[in-house]
Image (cartoon, rainbow, N blue to C red):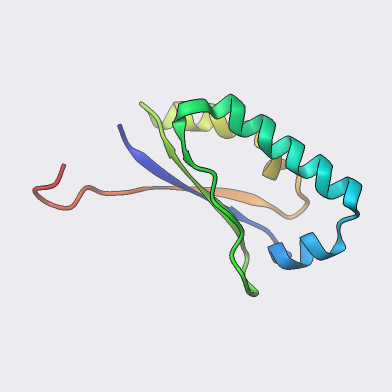
Length: 100
């Protein structure tokens, strides 16, 4: 089962997004992420977190699915897709020689 790294990119840093959100917007955002995590179920290995500092990476998640199509289905209605100027990049890890 491949492990996939989902990088959540945004034109604004996670710190900027969090600082400009109202408490209601922050709560709504967390509810959307929680609902998505529950839907992802055991395929979600690590929900991840936003990095500190100024970067276009707003966060990450680790997923394990049977196919790339399954991860595409999981990410189709991901809350990060609703952020203006945002994108999701999916990277698959290679098993080191002799380890997989």
